[in-house]
Length: 435
Image (cartoon, rainbow, N blue to C red):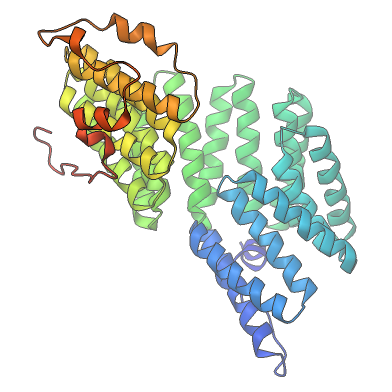
């Protein structure tokens, strides 16, 4: 525990009494950023790092700039932006090389190797091996454990399972010996993945459970939630649905207590999908709507759209066409606000299908026409939609007199005014009654 605390948890490093106030402030901002990374608040962490970077740049402090770039790579990686993470890590690596900072080079190489991962395994291995050698030369067990854990993960992906078991076992041994609890939790998690890949679900579950226990003991909520999610996958594969649901609900509770809103939204989505598969649409709807609303509040609109798509499936399976159409409209409005007009057309076409299933053929045809016009305006292929349009049954309305297919958009909008709605409110019911 001592090793983990000293190495990973944020702290204010000693600063000389005569240190420049700007440098002092920048280092404190770095520490605040470290704390937010640990808590999973990537937005706050990024803001602190941007401010620290400006201060270091004003002082022409190359080492400070390199350190911030390296931490920005970590934040981008955690946020799923591998491209930006790679750019930041590359820039940090060049600066550390110019400074002849061995451990800085090792840190930057490690994260650059993580960014490349399974997409460029050979280059990733080269970088990780270089980093590992530097850490070993400097007797930096924490860094060595991290490198071995990443190397083992790559070996698993490229079907070198036996080598991965040896590499990860070494990582576990070094972390245990040095007291690196965070490194131990990570190494055990990766080791469990190898066991799962080899089909040894019992050993995988035991190892995930141990990794989760250690993560809980050091307050690493992100790792604990990740391990629980991986155990859910195993339990579902084995048909232990009650245990799987219990683990998901435990994840939700942990995320709520820790204020991890993004992970809470993800856990609620996972619960909704799980309940959907268990033919529990009402309970699934409650979890999914809460997840969608939370993603919207976090301005994670792409995730909001994905959850809404699941809601469309659930409500359509119930024959609740009005609510299914509501979620279609939510997706369309979000796509429009993002100026992703090809996606607008895609979802107009999907909404047309739902309207057809509901027997509302006139509206189905109108939405399909709107999709075609939108495709045309964005120079996307649309001819394949014609057959679908012709296949929509005619109703009592005299469709033979409708406007030409390639109609003017203004005329089309007059026929379906809500197509130009800029945004939608999200009136999500909070009770358990009728939606």
